[in-house]
Image (tube, rainbow, N blue to C red; front, side, top):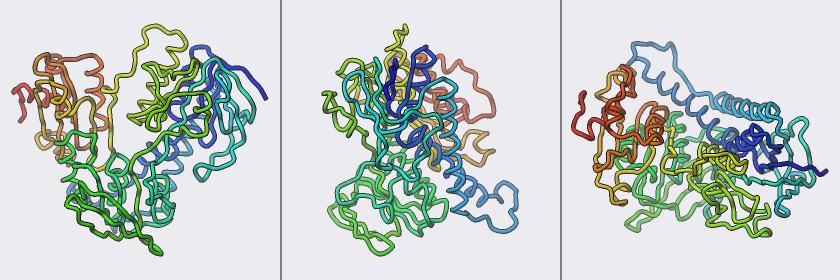
Length: 481
């Protein structure tokens, strides 16, 4: 089979399917190649199903504190692990089907199989020989199969997979990746989480809510290392209050496997080794781009540290070949991939006023309890960059809506350039901050100053009022603190 397209996208994850849709909207004949699941890791094994698990955990946490809200629950509320996982997987299947519908709606052809860049302007698709994740999604109806396909523009959106440390590779039974942690056969009594990034902390939070004894081991000096140190410290205290044990400046150097548990040798910063036995272990030490076996070396496409090198508009060093999303480097976030997809397609289509991605304006969200969200520079990074800063803080405990919700533990922090009033960064910890952060993202994108934020009317009573109060605090003008 051979067919010509304007655009072929390799990978139907959040970057790939958005690229395909935007290309079709611009009148380009488009196809997307997928080997495993429509909607990619995000909707099938990442962003969406993990949020479904965390929602179940959140409701369980609320029922445990029902009396504080003047409510009584007849009998005990227990977690049904099988039902929780079933709900999560059902939501993933729904999202998978939704992307298939979008492809049909936008007249994007689906090509099912393994894609290889055979030469510039050409993609060879073969039958899938190995299932990457179980279970593999069924081949969509009317999908095209193996063959050679040509296109003027080829976009690589192959995503990423869990990184494994030598000697501590996940085995699916005792040492889990996030794939395994999403669908456990049974609930472990104890769990060791290696890595305290978003993936590690979210699973630590989820399993703790279900009563599991959780220990988190992090090699850096703080949990969630990319976050502002003050926010991370606040989050750590709340996580520890929930009963999660956190070991910082420590690393797992060796793992001994038993019949139904593991014993991890954890090296602490003072050189001592502590042995920790747990039923299961999650390896959450990051992800790495899927750059292998797609023809990059043959075509001479440049890579660096496991990712494809691109310019400001997602072009590789080879004409007509582009890369977006996780495979093109950090931050490895679904919304970054989606934004890159639009930039890439609009630029190759000749659209005017296409702006490069500004990574400082990409928000980050961690959906643990408490939630953490941020955008821009941390206080430390701003100072390292040479800025003279003004820092504002506002506590949830002083916000009426937070108190009424019974969610009065949290903080909003803003960082400004003292000279210009530019908002350099915003950082939050507490209830619903993953929804609030977008207000600051919009403000930064519009190059809003502190004066404009101060003159913005925020509705009362809302959690969002804390955003304004944090700005006011940076300039010594907080009204409710």
